[in-house]
Image (cartoon, rainbow over all chains, first blue to last red; front, side, top):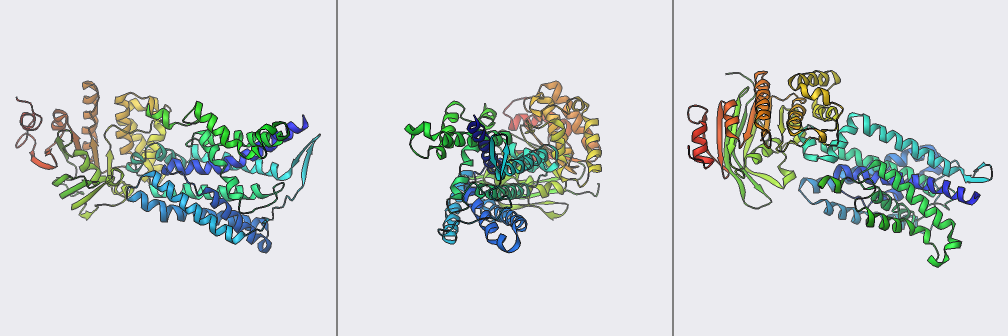
Length: 298
Length: 247
C-alpha cells in the first residue's frame, strides 16, 4: 500500500512536469499550427545553461538566466525559422520538419558539449525527503508539483482572463479573422514560443534533480515523453495537456514500480509506457481526450 | 466633398500560387464617407480585392503582382494586416468568421485589439451594443451558438470595435433571410451615417445598390462596368448584363 501511494505521488509529480512541457507544445501548436519537435533539445539547452552557470552564480540566478535564455532562444527560432516559412505560405508540416532538423542540430551540439558528463543543475533540494507517515517522497518531487501547479494555474488564468489570452484563443481558432480584427499575429506567436521555451527550462531543473542522477545527453529524450502527453490531451487543449501529462506520469511510474510483477513485458517497460498509452487512447479517440480539431470540422 | 481619407486601388493584379491571375488590372476608388458597391458573380475576384486591401492574400498563397493600393494618400500594399486595421481599414470577412468558441463579449474584445486603452474600448463597445441591441442579451454566450443573423451582427460589431474609417463588408447578406438582410442593410446605413465609408461586396445586387452611391461590377478579374448608382448603373442593367437575368 505504501509503495502504491509513493508510486502515485511520484507519478503525479512526474506527470506535472510532462504537463509543463506539453503546455509548451500546445501553446505553440495553437498559435502557429506547428508541432515543435525541438522542444526536447530546447529543454536540454536550458538545463545546460543552468548547469554551467550555477557553480558561479548560485542556483537561483542560474535558473533565472537559464529560463530567460531558453525563452529568448525559442523566440529566435520563431523569428528566424518559422516566421519566414509562414510568410511565404509554407505548409505547417514543413515547419514541423524544420523543427526536427533543428532538434538534431541542437542535440548533436549539446551532446558534444556534455560528452559523457553527468551535469548537476545545483538545485537546493538535494536528496532530502518528505515523510508523511510511512510514505517517503523526495522533496524535489513535491517542489516540482508545486511549481508546475502554480505555473499552469497562472498560465490558465492569463489564458482565460487577459487580453493576451483572448487574442491567443482567437488566433488558435481562426488566424485570419484574428488578424483582420487587429491582433498582431507575429507577437502572439513570439509569446507562445517564449512560454514554451521558459516552461521547458523550468522542467529541466526538476527532471534532472534527485532522485534522477543528473542531466546527461539523454535528458532530451525524457522530455520527448511529454509529446504523447500532449497528443493524448488533444494537442490544442490546455486541460488536455495537464490531464495527458498526469496520465503519462502515472503510467510510467506504475509500470516502472511494478516491473517485478510485469517481467513478461521485459526490462524498462516503464519508459515505453507513455507511447503505449498514447496509441491506445488514439485508437479510441483519434482527436485526443480534449481535442477540438476533429469536432470542429464536423 | 469631405476631406477625409480615400482608398485608391490602382491597376491591381493578383495571383494565387502561380495559378494564373485572378485580378487583371482592377482600379477603384472609395471616397471618404461614401458607400461603394463591388458586384459580380461568384469567382469574379471580389473577395480577392478585399484580401489585397486587408493584406491577407499571403494566407491564401496569393500575392499582388502589379499595381498599388493607397489609403489617405499613402501606399499600403503588402503592409502587415494588423497595421492596416490600425490605419482604419477593417474587414468583415465572407462567412462572418466569428470566434465560435469565444463568448460574444470576448469576440468584441478581440475586435478592440487595435485600440489603445480600456476607455476607448468601453466607448466603442457601447456604440456597437446601441447599434445591435440584440447582442446585449447574448454577451456571455458562445458566438458559435448564435443564429446566422446574430453572427453577422457580431462580425460587424467586432469590426466596428477597431473604430474603422473604412469598413470592408464581404457578402453580409449571404445565407440570411430577407427580413434579417433588411436589418443588416439598416445597420450599414447607420454606420455610414456616423461617418464610416463602406466598401460593400455583394452578389445580392439589390441590397448593395439600395445602399451605395457608386458601384463597380467585376467580371473575371476586370472592372466591366462602373458609375453612379441610378445613372450609369441600376439594378436592371446589372442583372441583365452580369447576373444572366433578362429584365
